[in-house]
Image (cartoon, one colour):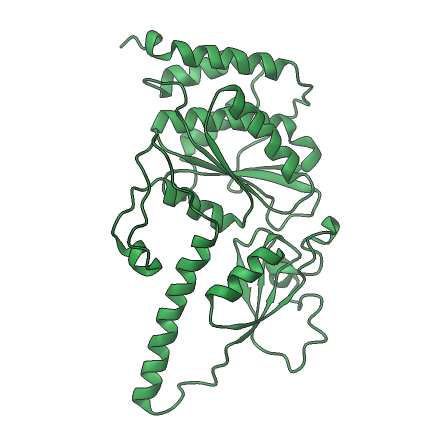
Amino acid sequence: MDTTNKLSNLYLKIKAFAQYDSELSFDFEHISYGTAGFRNKGNKLNKVAVRLAIATFIRSISIKTPIGIVISASHNPSDDNGFKIADLEGKMLPFEWELIYEEIVNSKNIEKTLTKVIDKTVDNYQDGEGKIILGYDTRESSPFLCSLIVKVLSIVNCPFINYDYVTTPQLHFLVFLLQKQIKDDLLNKVLNKRDFSISDQYGTYVDIGKDLYFQLYGNIFKVFNDLYDKISNIKKKQLSNYTNELIIDMGNGVAGLKSIRCLLQENFDLKFDFINCNTEEFNLLNVESGAEFVQKYFLLPKSVDNKSPFGKMCSYDGDADRIIYL
């Protein structure tokens, strides 16, 4: 079927993007999309940010649903950075699209490559379609890389929501929510928000706040906590030496932000002792702290020495998508 007329406006946007792309100075070092997405030193990712933005726009309009981009390099050193895509239901990209992303990011003739991808994957297009959800961790390079993505989305008139500082699980969760038409289901019951709803794909989206992630899992935790109390009452005794005190090593990453610590305190019936929460000194990220450090070296994270007596404890990694209990 001839889709040229249906895609004519899209081809014009691709031409405008190609013009912008040609004006930028890129180091054409080949980069692959792996399990962790694209990763490199933060100052070598400008080309990837720009090309990934246009690839994600095409992915979104091809499946008519919001797609997420999280800017993070997880447990890597602080001067690294990277990009991961939150696809359908907040999951990973299909393998065939990983190859498409690689082809676009590494293309020597970007307009030709994008036109070929569009011809294979997009049936129709209306101006203003697409929806990109953005978020990033606390690495020094993250806000600038995000600004490059925003510039591209503006060129092609693609709507986006920038949640700025988020954990990786938060971003995947927010993408999942925005992909669903939610009215009266289990999620509402857990959140106790019977009027919570999201509009159709290209209508007006409600403002889904970052705090919903913590509300949901906080309420799930309370359900289990109530169950524990009921079982304890039936047994007429405590089932274990349970304590609601927990030390959390934040790895000096995004989970250490004051806003996120406050959300944890507000939504979980626990007494938290947060350590390694310095997000202002970028070079401290994952240094002698975090899940990767604990797992790899079998050592306690920095700042634990002065915790006496030693209690229950866990460690996040840099973007809080992994947790290890000690």
